[in-house]
Length: 249
Image (cartoon, rainbow, N blue to C red; front, top):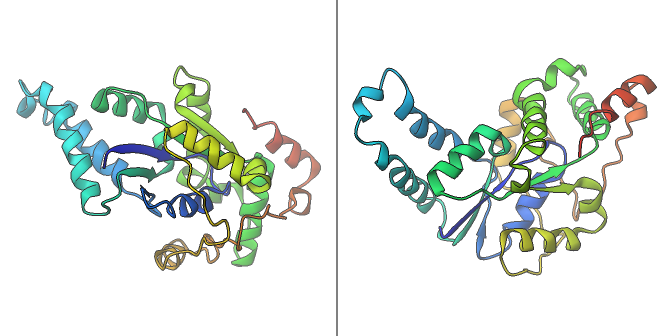
């Protein structure tokens, strides 16, 4: 691994399609899901944990070089591609950006697909309906949506805004080549001609869908097409307007 970037953003905004597409590049590896940030954070935070801090006294200068090696070791078992785009939404949180800066000595580059909130909610509502699950905003609390939204909004409004490349779902679905060129420019890699129709999901997708109880969570049609989930088919006018007011970019 010579370069490390990140894929975060909001759910139901095209990040899985984008990740599979970027994976076509023989120089780029994008995991379907990644536990890397959890591994890194736990290794990073233990140095300041009051219960363990005495064991690390006098070793403060070793934390960054040690965690760099942990990062390389983690991905050396997954890929031999030189460029990794780690796929995890929590990278867009301010505290994780600051952790990255402390370890690697530079700001991270984070690709963040976004989508109008009323459309995200309609997409969730449609997915739940197909799984015979009653729609409720309580069902998207925490990691499903709420935490991702707050983290991205806070970073967008912080001094770390320049770490983010926001990719609007509308632009991604209507002009994917232009978006891909922006992404390659953002990460400083040469453009690669992708096959927009070759985005078949790996077998791991079905295992994750079964675990979370949402069949179709990773369904993507051949080539990216804008979802036809209409917010007005799921919500009242007031609800749609309230969701729309959450769009901050």
